[in-house]
Image (cartoon, rainbow, N blue to C red):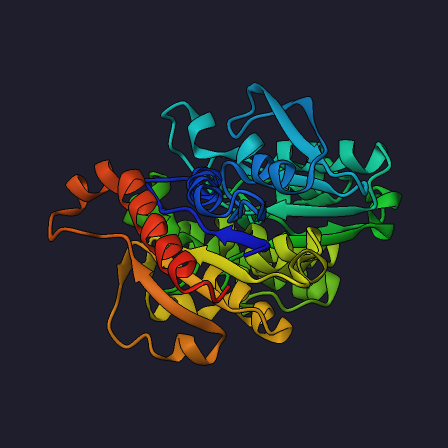
Length: 378
């Protein structure tokens, strides 16, 4: 075995992608000490996205004082990769932990996210990857847009900064003053959900309660997002209500499309494009991937399947090492997964299993390496 690529997702609540890469690499090198093992830590757009990209591709972290979700100053940050691409996780400026227990999505803003974007663009970045996830907001991205020069006016013609609770006051949207350099920037949004902007499966209904919204607030936030979509359609000529992923991060997905012509992309594809996966994996003997549970949701193109599809095109086998394996996952083999192994060694509750997940992963990888080294086929 000469060259191995590692591209696992995190095991939610148990191990980060970087931890999994470290364990896998250690076990591989124990049997193949001369092997080239290339880890690609994976991010999903939420907290830790910047660190994952920097670990995978290199670069530097830039800190910027910005406005937090409830308008208090916070120290935000973003990453700059060696090719000049900026990586922003909205959680760094509008994340739920920054709300300080004040879980009021109707009052929260994404203004600080726009400040991070502005800093990156004014620093010369002309490609930007924005990760959506872990937000305290439900403002449809209008706060970020305002920070970048988009003007929102009420019925009196007065400009104001809307939040999720005041979106219904927007009577007009003017993008004429938007930061000019932003129009020359390639903007990719990492989005692993397909929820629409509003309705029963929308931002407020599905994610609002997690942010502190009661049923009455959920209904109000949903109506407000629908109103925003109507004004966007009239003033900007874009229909964002039913775009898959427009409901991500309190409607930020839809706002990024509406105001900045962003492209919504699955997180794994954004990562693999950024690290030039096809070049890295060329000539590889094997790819290892994994996630907490392999199930029907995985087939939507999440980490294992996203990596498998690309490995398949290169003719490189991919082995998935996962926590749980659901029924009816046979379709994954047609997508490029060569085999699936669970790390679970005992029929015990999840709370107990996660405490031993690291040792179970190490043992599973150890057993796989023993098999490969015994037969000497790879």
